[in-house]
Structures are given as structure tokens and as C-alpha cells.
Amino acid sequence: MTVMKKLQGLAASSFLAILAFNVPASASEQLTVTTDQSQIITVNRAPGTVVVGNPTIADVTIQGNQLFVHGRVFGKTNIIVLDENGSQLAEYMVNVVLEDDYNVVVFKAGVGAGIQKESYTCKTDCESVFHIGDSLDYYKLINEQQKNKLGLAQGQKPGESGDGGGGQTPPAQ
Image (cartoon, rainbow, N blue to C red):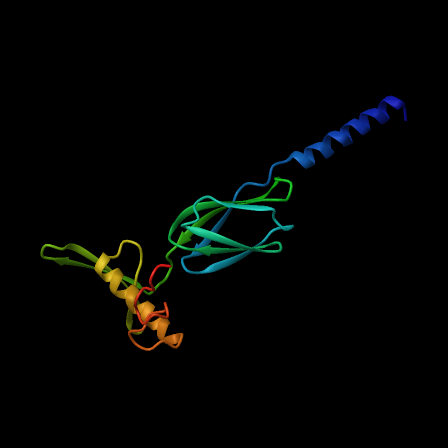
């Protein structure tokens, strides 16, 4: 083999190696996550930085080379995963959906109150839940009931708040 052919082969190999390191991450992967649920994604090595386009829609917790994607509210966002050197490992287009076969929405027309929206989940019996867009009064009622239920589960007496002051705000110091 002549020196010229060896140089051409070396140049071609070098060019391919450079291309391999400069190829951007593959096209965005589609990911669907249900609201109030999490999904595990494994990347090929531990990320250095993870950027969420809209953290009100989805959020991420990192453990080693696993990402736990949490669906917060329905909508679309993206997640970009970078390594320690800032090179892109992956990108995900995230669609957070409210996917429950048992969801029911009730619209009530009231005098002077306009149309009121209430959300329920109904499998055998219907139970109140709240979602974005529900009427403010309905939301406040369900939210307060959920706080009370959580407080009881944590050992509080009925009517007692979690602030340790019997429902009163402690004085500023």
C-alpha cells in the first residue's frame, strides 16, 4: 500500500470519528405521562443537567442515570438532558394527559354565578376531585376537605391545623 493510500484511509477514518462525536442527539422522543403519575426514563449515563421547558406541566427527579418524570397538569413541554460536558444526551417531547376512564365533569348553570364546573371520578361511586378550570368555590371546598383528611391521617384532631398552633398563625418574631 502506498503512503498516499494510507493517508487517505487515515483521513477517512479520522473524518468518520469526528462525525461520530459531533452527531447531535437523535430526534426528540415522544413521552406521554398521566397527571399525578410518574414514569421512569433511563439514559445511557448520569446527566449533568436536565432542563424542563415548563415545570408547571412536568417535573423531573434524577437518580443516577434514571429520570423520574412527574406529570403535574395536562399540557405539553419538553425535557433536555445534557451530560457533564454540556453535550446533549437526549430530548423528550412530553405530553401530560388527564387519562382516566372514570373522569366526569359536571357543568352547573346558576343564577348570577354563571356556569360552574365540578370534576368527579366515578368507578362504582362518584368522588369529588379537583382539576384546573373547576369553579373556585368547588376547588376551595375539595382542597379544604383534602387538607383535613391529610391532617387526620397525620394524627391531628378535627379542626386542628398542621401548624401546631391549633389553627392560629404563630406570632412573627
